[in-house]
Amino acid sequence: MLDLQLQVMHNGDMKTQFDSASCPTCHTLFDRLPVEYDEFGAYVFLEQRPCAGCGPLLCSCCHQFHCDGCGEIFCIDHLVSVPDGIDAPLRCCAPCAAECEQVELPTRIPPQTERLAPSSREVA
Image 1: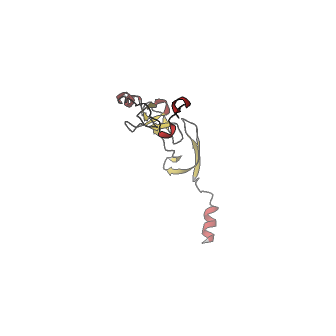
Image 2: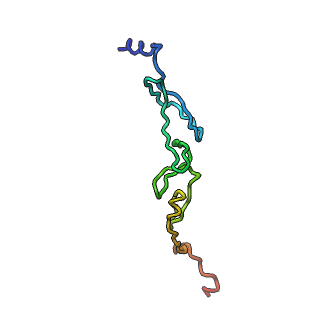
Image 3: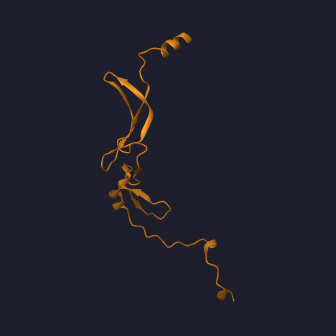
């Protein structure tokens, strides 16, 4: 069994199993991507998705967001934050943000521990 492994390791015709590639949008270098072979040659596969607004390919390191309205993936240039009454606003694309209803936010009522203490004149 050991002889077979040595023969495979010393075989000069071994194909490369991993290679590097960089994202054309953010220029992040991805190392040790698996190399795929077919009848046309060898290639590496870097998973990317197009921005639904302007089309450039976005990798996992590109600045992007999923629209809370339509669920599409957009580059960060299309981000519109829509306040909805909670700490984290909605992250929407421009068409979905235009369809959002404006929510009148109530004035913040501070918790009991944050209320101002009575002044000395009010106590006396």
